[in-house]
Amino acid sequence: MDVLLDNLDLYGPFFWTTIKLFLISGVASLIFGTFLAGLRVSPVPVFRAVGATYVTLLRNTPLTLIFVFLVFAYPLLDILELSYFTAAVVSLTLYTSAFICEVVRSGINTVPVGQAEAARALGLTFTQILGQIVLPQAIRSVVPPLMSMLIALLKNTTIAAGFSVAEAGAIRQYLSERGDNQLIGLLWVALGFIILVAVLSLIQRALEKRWSVAR
Amino acid sequence: MSNVLFDIPGPKARARHRVLAGLGILAVAAVLAYIVYRFIDSGQFTARKWEWLQFAQVQRDLGNAVVATLEAFALGAVLALVFGAIFAAGRLSDHAWLRGISTFVVEFFRAIPLLILMFLFYYGGPALGISLPPFAAVVLGLTLYNGSVLAEVFRAGIQALPKGQSEAAYALGMGKTQVMTLVLIPQAIRSMLPTIISQLVVLLKDTALGFLVTYPELLYYARYIGSQGAFGRPIVPSTIVVAAIYIALCLLLTALANYLERRQRRSKKHVETERPQPTEDMVGVA
Image 1 (cartoon, each protein chain N blue to C red):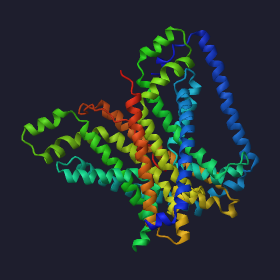
Image 2 (cartoon, rainbow over the protein chains, first blue to last red):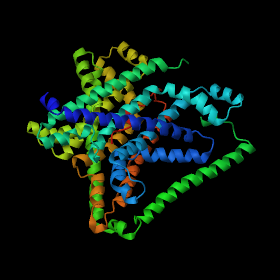
Image 3 (cartoon, one colour):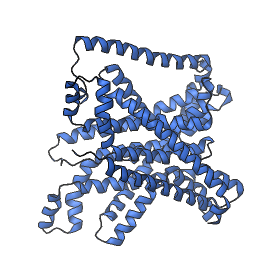
Image 4 (cartoon, each protein chain N blue to C red):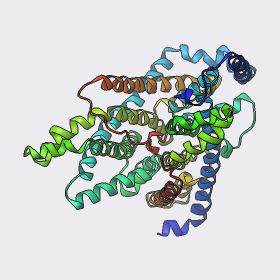
């Protein structure tokens, strides 16, 4: 308990950074992932190929490698300067979107054919069908796996600790500088994550109940 | 499935799609061209940045780094499978206390980020007077996290089997152990094999976390060689090379999973079970 109480000035702000990282990259991944799913089901073959290539590449690359690239290699390219925090958000988003895309796409598959056919019969365009008819139903049906992806994202934020972002995973480093017990300190970090994951699971269950579509 | 969303294009739609495809190609090409331009402009394609690949010593070290990654993967995979089998059995046990303990262990290790687990073993160990080498910390972390996930996969596989399978076996007078080992597990493993291998892809990617606890694996080597002034600090080329190796290794495993799935669908012995929905564990932590 002492380790936690003595270092509340670390745990508070660092976990807050974790939550910020999670929220920003979560929203960004949902948007970008859905966009990628749109590419993957589009009538234009080139768009489908682009989406598929992106997903295959990113899903088979370790997230840590993306971090290494963005933090150590990318600055040499002299494009746009990213702070460590921004680089972490970009890495997490690029990686998580590939998985979100696949989940959304599997959700699109669960929407009955008749829905899109009826929409088409009404003369709606592809974008209208996708945006107004299919996606709203698709996303509702994949709320549980979508939330699971977000839980994974939350756990993945810890990797930013290795890349100079002061979030929960980095608490250990600061504790070691203060000479505190790292084992106990890490157990508190672990407990923090267990609580955060539990909260997300609760939200998941609530959304599931509220949003499930009767079919 | 995708033609649920749109009709087979007619002449007008085909023309429009061609225009869109052209624009799409232009946009992608523009982005790629800009990236390549930045690479060239910042000198990433100069011979000096790539010559390290020609050195025999570097090639040997790179090979060793791949081996180190595969070692952590292989040992982690075997131990995770064993751990998963034990705790899946525990969660399906008839004894409430055994179920309780197994559920707790599985849920506990799944909720903690893998990196924090590795930190616990690597940095936390000394507080208890146990100093683990990075390799042990990486393998232990991989085992506990992925083992817990695999325990759930095994359990889901057994529970997804038709009820008649175990009922018939019990009716024949088999005991619980016999029902499990002779009837349920062989079928469950068959139907779960693709999922199990996908999880191993995750485990392979997760070995890259070893980089953060100083285990000298592939990514660690990429960072090391990338910081060598003698080669002009080729961090961009080295991460590209290493990324290609990781992607190739993962795709090989994925191809194996797909092959098994296809073969299984043809097999008459296959019992059709419902695949569980994707979970966060398929994302992997690394």
